[in-house]
Image (tube, rainbow, N blue to C red; front, side, top):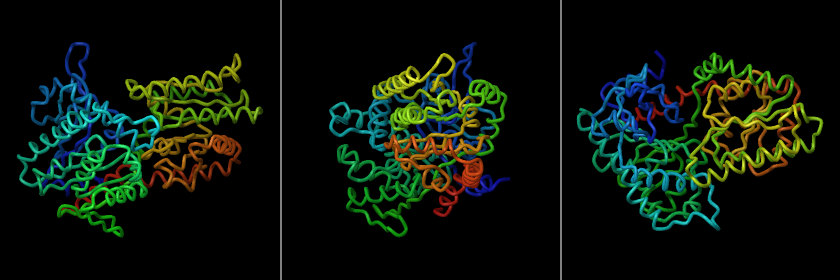
Length: 497
């Protein structure tokens, strides 16, 4: 039994753990015969929390993502049901709201308003424009879905002899702690925030009542988790600015509010090391690896793996590569740049435009420098994790030049599976940077010339330098795996009981 399993057994002996996330661990789809079949979900949160799914005293509550989820849950009317995914022991409950309400919640408030705000992605001269549509979506979308989650959690708790432990995640459910606290005052509530937390001044981009509602709710948690120390400090400063009735213990990062103490802690998210190593040696990944090797042959390879989102800074990365080819013609026809991109939020206008910009710069570089036998950039636009992992095994340089990001797990997956002593070029504004900074080539996300130089430096390093950086990265990442990440949070929750 692992430390995590022992901790779960001890912590959940007399209490139920209720997890709440927008996307859950299980999705239901109809097969060819019209039978509903359970499938393990592939979202980042579901993957991160997967080690908890073999524990019985857990209920995971999430939004119904499709018609299969709606049907299996009888439109959300069924009580908890056991997950049918192999090795899952948890119970499930689906939140079913009308498509109109969910659209307001997710497509107007969560994305793009909150997501863009927390990634510093707004251009204040032009956006956001908080009109009546956004005010309506907040009241009749975001608030309503958060209330629905709270009502279901409260219903779950009524049958439990002890107040439950409630763990919620991310920007989709910022109002949940308040609604739960009103009805379950003795429950233990933790909320983990995966996104960066902007400075208090940047929060002024949205109406003050929204900021107040978010902070008023989060401060009614017992425990708040953040990706980085900077995110935690920005949150405390935001609370200090907008909630004058709070008392902040800056030395212990604790907030006293409405008679409650909310502790804020840093839990840098990480990866399941054995799991990604297993995928890297799977038949599918090995087949893709053979295909990539046959393409690059003896050439050097730059790789990036991203969701096709504006904050990933893909266009600037390609422009830095364009500078590299222009200033180092000796590299022509001896190097490839493979970009494994996952389509993301394709219904949102800003994402559509950004994908157009990616294709435009790719075509420009390939037209200018490519030959009949060599294509400088190749894009693999698909949600194909095995193919992306195969690419990570073979990079000479891995480029992650994100603008602002909560963590970026590719920065940890790549060094774990890479077989060529690859070098990591990493943005200083990436959440993974504080942990990995001593073993990477650091870049500013807007510095095209600096990124170009870092790419060239990574390609030009001596074998011994590459080996040392690769070894140090591997050790730094492997000692802080996903089980350790979960264990630390459960340990802190246990201290509150």
